[in-house]
Length: 196
Image (cartoon, rainbow, N blue to C red; front, side, top):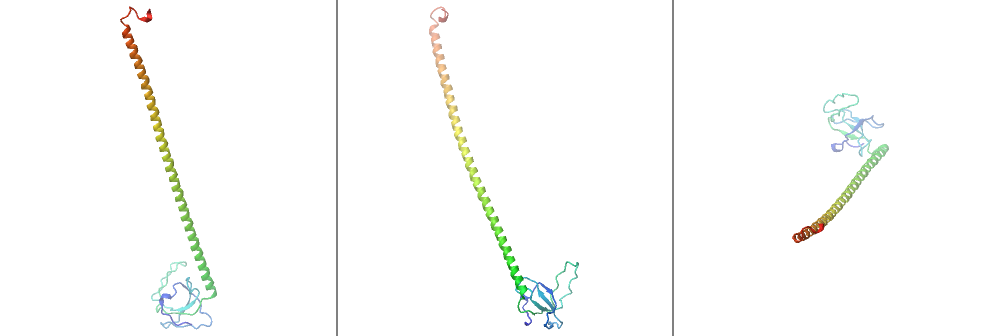
């Protein structure tokens, strides 16, 4: 059996009441009363180990309002405790290993899930950026084509206007020539030429 421990930093926090193991004598705490026997239920290096602790409380334990909800107990009066077991039992070692394995598996699964989410987000971001680049290129191409079409139409309209202006000028020239001919022929003969 170990000596009474006054190091409260390693005193177990989660425990359950158990019976006194065979071959172990009951001890008294610093208060002078018989100690109660507890077993560590916390996931730690002391899982399953039994110890003595003070049976008295600093204050009266709060009354339970339900059979399923138990309020936390107040701290012991003299904070006495002494380890009964010096090492963990086989089942506790296996339980600790299994809990550790499950914790690592859960952590690994969470890490892989976060990594997969990050990769999926990166892939979505890359796909969105590629889509934006494609859309930008498409819009630039459309602008370029529209600009080219605008220039082509402006050139076509300019050519048509020039052709119309040339046709008008040709008709004006012909009209001027006809008018000059008419004025020159007005004094000759009694009737116009086409009636003769």
